[in-house]
Image (cartoon, rainbow, N blue to C red; front, side):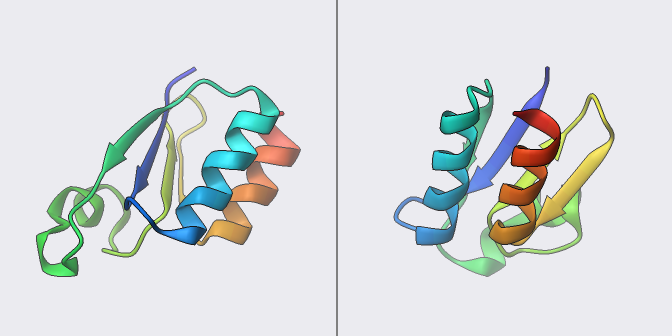
Length: 79
């Protein structure tokens, strides 16, 4: 499985997603982003937005933001 989570250190929404992935036993990579929105070019390239968290599930062709949506996806699809 190829899951990538774009996250900001200290972001409570990102931590919520990290916890959901860990609870579900999902293996994933974390790409840590810059604190300044203007420097989040990689996140913008993959998701069209600069906000985090962003989850990319390459195997299923899914890219999504918003922690609540990501947690729901993890629980319903990846767990």
